[in-house]
Length: 247
Image (cartoon, rainbow, N blue to C red):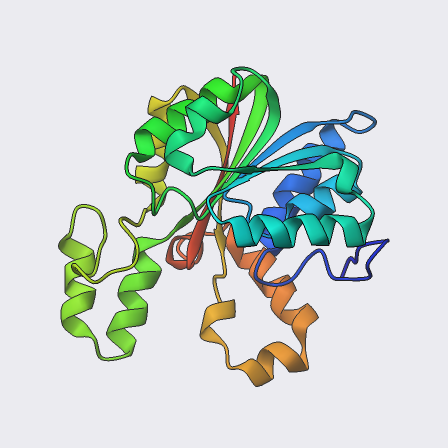
């Protein structure tokens, strides 16, 4: 398992292995170049700090001042404070926070589920990318939510998730929507982006007891990577990761 050279903390776990595998290939594609990265909803810097440690400049946009304060401390502890900028704002306001054509790589993880207008945010992301720039999109999967509620005996909520156009379990659902691969792809395509890869994230990690995760984390990580690109396993993952590019 890879660790940060400065902090010794793991960069890759079973929960994020599929995402880092794709990001690593993109970084390798630009080896020797300092990328301008935008992390929308980047919170405390779980991705931003390692990217800055790799030599890239990262702007993190997040609505939570507490998360941004934690990000600032984390960046300082890792010795990369000069390469990370924190901006308070939410995804719906992205178009007003970022200059057009300014980013080489944009991360938008667990954001489109909670914004008011995901199509508007997707368009703002496309506009913020330079030609050839790439998007790492992570969204909640509908199928996993259906199965999770069904096996826990919440059958009405599971049925609601199947039939609701937005993939919600009811008015008390904390998310505004969930996605399947086709729906997320259509959203990005409509914004002018080309989806190059789709992976499942947390295919089995959320299903395993803690003892299994702790006993052999490397085996879990390897299984996650093996299943992440293979339907039908990919499609029942807790999250879907789409990697898209602006032409």
